[in-house]
Length: 211
Figure: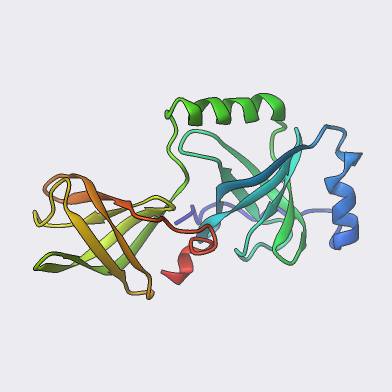
């Protein structure tokens, strides 16, 4: 889960309405907004995390969509992948949309280029969620209980005791009612990585609380 030790920083004089929030999202920030339609990221807030979307990005902030509970002033870390992230705090919210003001301004154009370059070069893994969720694994006549340690749109990391090996097809039934199919891509004596067939949507991974 996200770090619980982060303090919630109060916002003084920030807008609490969607109308004023839209103003913050506009050019009042003094920097160009870069549209990022469909950009799936991981949001870390105190005590929870989940996947969501960044709709646009500027040097001073971002417009995001998330179902995570985020009151005004909530600190948020936005992880685009395993190496590129920014930190900020909620300055307005309207339904699932929220405005983030970065703690430290960035060069948004350069940041977007780096995210794209790292993804193209496969040096950065897509966002994943750390969880501790019980599940059942089935492969042929083998069936055993496991703990899912992390999950992303494309894969699952879980624990095992030697039952799995690379190349095995598996079915995974999670306690939350989610059923998945995939192939073991790697395995050692205690853990394994499953590549999912079909994958998961960002909506299914919007909040780790469901697991």
